[in-house]
Amino acid sequence: MEMTVVDLSAYLESEEAGVKELCGEVSRSLRETGALLVKDPRCTAEDNDRFLDMMERYFDSPPEFKRLQERPQLHYQVGVTPEGVEVPRSLVDEEMQEKLKEMPKESQPSIPKGADRKWRYMWRVGPRPSKTRFQELNAEPVVPEQFPEWKDTMDSWGYKMISAIEAVAEMAAIGFGLPKDAFTSLMKQGPHLLAPTGSDLRRYGQEGTVFAGYHYDLNFLTIHGRSRFPGLNIWLKNGQKVEVKVPVGCLLIQTGKQIEWLTAGDCIAGMHEVIVTNRTIDAIKLATEQNRLLWRVSSTLFAHIASDAVLKPLGHFAESLLVSKYPPIYAGEFVEQELAMRFTSRKIMALPILVFVLVMTGLVDQGQGTTCTSTFFSALVQLIPCRVAVAPFSPIPPSETCCNALKVLGQPCLCVLVNGPPISGIDRNMAMQLPEKCAANFEPCTF
Ligand SMILES: O=C(O)CCC(=O)C(=O)O
Ligand SMILES: [Fe+2]
Image (tube, rainbow, N blue to C red):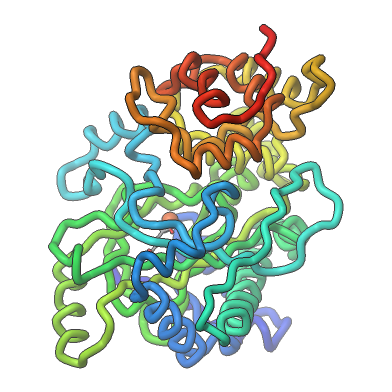
């Protein structure tokens, strides 16, 4: 299927009547396909190339070098995430797995058998709020040595892509019959992330390899510059699977879960996967002939709603019959829940009331002189590096990374977790043994 390309210059340069039609085109495409191709005069093919050249060179560096930029104790919010760490939703979500089996063969996604075979780099873009309910850990940006151009290249490409997203968000709001700034006003100071993926085509260039298993994005809108290697499949609202072709100089926008919330499901989060297809293999052959690096780099940017803004159906979407599926929730809390899902399984989400109580208890004094200031989900996410060590009957001792994460988390938050509801894949007793195994001098938890 050929997707239409919307030229943003027509919108950026005029305020006239024809623009309304263009906005209708934007909202229609987002609603029906979960995606949109745009051309933005401010984001040129040269800018995209400068970014891709640097990221290819980075991902092609030795793994020992790249691991210097790994920050598991900050749950990979900044710096590099090695391959094999990110878990696609379809691997842990049993309900999703059932649905996949019911899909017609021709539109079934590749079922991932393990964590994604892609590296990623996380770089925050844009101003952050000075006061927030969702104080992040003190995550200084991570800049690899020997890349003097890093900050400038990341920031300039990041800001340009955010500008494109803002134009699309305004156009979509107009197209959906909402005030022009309905979305952009909520995006101010959002935790936007430039998060390019890097997949090693030399090692994993076989057809069918899954780089990113079937999933949706948890943010508002995702924007990708053009990748030099195809492989992205998207699913339309009607369930049809489409291989995306991004023309040179164009950008691809995809809908995330937060826009679904704001429109009460009128515009649903686009499902997608990245796999090695026969077109990826053709591109590998061409790149080999041209002596280019064999890393598939995406220039993905996740644009978010501000953490302290409330996600709830906007304007006329509040009248939707589906509104009860989208109750008001702070965007920051929503993100924490989604991240925790990737760590655990969907079973815990069947306990929304209990979870609500725990989120509150997470902020309550434990009666031991200190307080856990993280929410339950945030605490859970922080312990991701410990997951192999706390699995039932696990013989694996906690890694140094796990122990560091535990010490950063602190005793009160660990106690909140072990007092919480059962979490699939985590043995409470194993979790309680962590302080001793890590030689952390924690007081025992009271029950
Ligand atoms: O690698 C890509 O092209 C996109 C990866 C993706 O879907 C994601 O990062 O969420
Ligand atoms: Fe994605």
